Image (cartoon, rainbow over all chains, first blue to last red; front, side, top):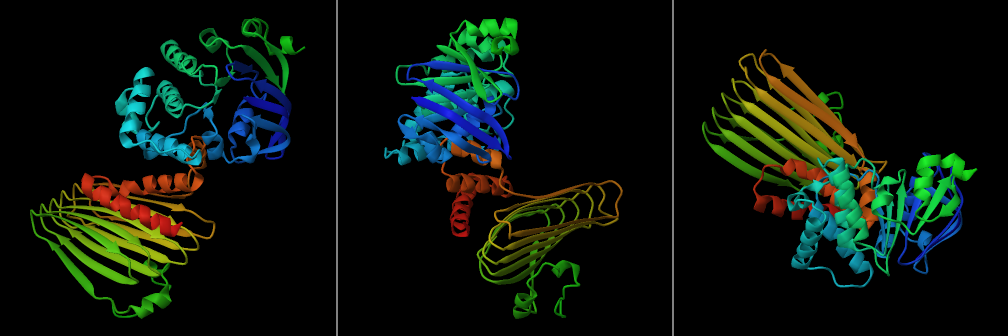
Length: 246
Length: 242
C-alpha cells in the first residue's frame, strides 16, 4: 500500500526527516509514536504534500505510484486521507458543500461519475449518524465553532464519506475525552479492511487500547529507531522513548 | 462637485484621475426613502464611470442596499446617506477588481436624528494589479443620540501586485452612541487552502470557494433567492477575474 524509502525532508532549510523507511501493507494498521519534534507531523504533511515541506531525498510509493509526483488533491483522489491534528475552520463554506465538492472532485479525477445530490446526502447522513455528529453540524461552516472533539469527529465523518484506501491520522486522539475517543476509535476501526490501511500518529498509548495496531514504530530525530508489535505501546508508556531507543 | 478633483483631495487620493476627468462632472442622483417605508436595491456596477447617490432616509424608514461592483476599468460609487430619527441603513458591498482596474466605494453616513442605525459590510477582492478602495465615514451629529453604527471592511489580495486601501473615519458629536469599525487586508488562508486540497478539491476550485465564502458576509440577511442569484453572479465574476 505505502512504501516509504529513505525519505529525507526539510522545512525552511532545516532537515526534519533524516532517512525514514517504512512499509505499510494493505489490511494493516501501523502506529508511529515519538517525542515532540521527532518529525511525526512533518511526515504526515510530506505525505499529503503540504507546501513548504520539501522532500530532499528518498521515495514514497502509494499503491504502486510515485506519491511525491502528485499534487495534494491528486493524492486525495488516489485514496490518501490526512486527518489533521488541528482541523481548520473555514468560515462561509458549509461542511456539506465542502465534502460534496471534495468527493466529486476526487471522483472526476478518477474518471468516475459524480455523486448526485441525493446520493451524497445519503452518504453524509449515514456517516454523521455513525459517528454521532448531529446532522445540523453538517450544514454549518466547516469546523467553525466546533469543540475539539467535534472537529475530530468531523474528520472521521469526512473520512467515512471519502472512503480512502489509506488514512494517515495525525494525533487524532489529542484533546479528546473518553467518550469522544471511543467514537473516534470506532470510526477508525470501522475503516479497517483487507483493502485499506491506517497510519496512526500519536503521542499516547491510550488510543492504541481502542485501535489495536499490527505494528508500532518509534520515530526519533527523523528516523524510525525501533519497531515492534502492539505490546510496544505499553513498554513505551512505562519506560519512555529514550530507554527504547538506547 | 464642480472643480476636477486632484490627488490632494482626501476622497480622491486613490482614484484613477485620468479616468475621473473623462467622467467629470458627475450628476448627483437623489434617492429618497420616505418616513416609515422600507426599500431595498441591488446596484450592479459594470460600466466605467462614477455614480454619486444622495440618499435620504426619513424617520423610521429603512433602506437596504447591495452593491456588486466589478468588471470596469474605473468605477467609483459614492453614497451620501442621511439618516433621520430612527432610520436604518444597511449596506452590503462586494468589490471585485482584476487586471489593472480601479474600483472605489466611498460612503458618508450622517446620523442627523436620534435612534438611527447603520451598518456597512464591504468585502473586496483584488487580483492582477487592481486597486480596490473603501473610504467610509460615519458622522454622528449632536442630535444623533443612541446612534448604533458599524462598519466592516475586509479585502483579499490575490496577487502581490494588487492593492487594497481602507480609510475608515468616525466623526462623533453625540455622547451616547455605539460606533464600531474594523478593517483588515490579507490573503487567502493557506491553512484552509491546504485543508481543502488535502480532501481532493483542486487548488483553483478551493480558491474560488474560499473567496466566495469571504465575500458572502456582504450578502448576510438577504433572502435565499436573492442570495442564490447573487452567488451565481459572483461565481461567474470570480471566474473571469481568476
